Image (cartoon, rainbow, N blue to C red; front, top):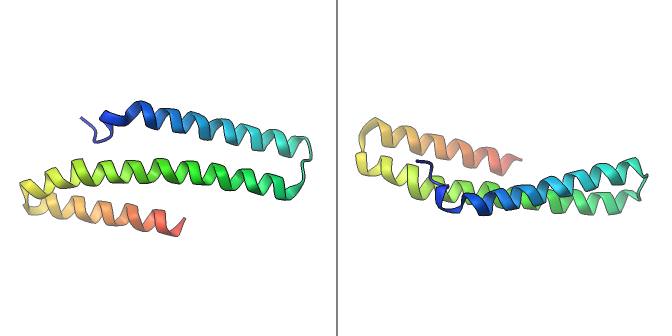
Length: 93
């Protein structure tokens, strides 16, 4: 079972909202909307995806990493490295 199973519907709802925002941005570009207005919407869509990413990361830490830590050994080390790499990717983006 994946760590986000308990809030899967919330994640899907947030992703649908972000998808709608991206479609709206696409439409704004097609309609030659003012640049700053488009940038505002890009910022909102980015924030929506960051919210999803942070929720997934939180679930991963609380479920997968915590479970691996209880097991110990190389499994725990691998999960911690994996989580650290995911955090680094989020920080860079």
